[in-house]
Length: 211
Image (cartoon, rainbow, N blue to C red; front, side, top):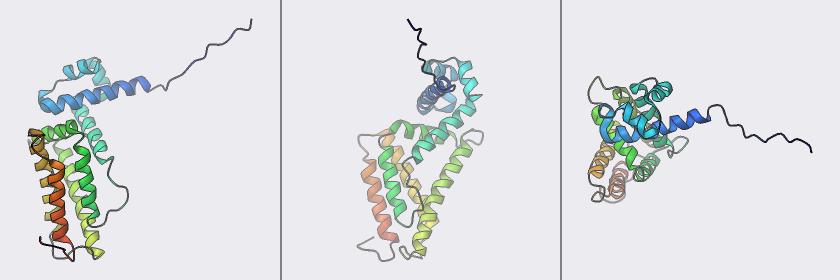
């Protein structure tokens, strides 16, 4: 009888490592979201991920690098639904409405962001730079699109759009805070959509209806 060579199913050399890294990130998000950066320990994250603390250090170097990886991963998820290409005028408000709708289904990620953002108000917090960049990016996305709307004749020319951008972010963040405290009592999607409708009426070159 002819001897048959066993069939093998090789896996990529990084598959086990990537799986472990993914588990660590998942558990770190949960721990940081519940107890903050300083309250969560590498040992509890390691235990939840089914890995040793040395295993976490192998993949991420230290706790601060793990935090940075968590925040980058969180931002990638947050931007996953953002439209590709240049947004003009109120199209950016449409996109922001979709972000709020998506985040409604990702309460764990929203909690993570708010807990770490509150902690990062201290100058020595490792996430401070991340959140400064995060808010700068949001304001830039808004102001660039609104400026393009002005150039296209869609929006009024006598509005401070940098102030509008900051107010939109403040409304978004504030509603998320209230929703995290009272998910059943705060209809974040409806309230944010109502707010952006008011903004649209206010900034349109030819407003329709009362402001």
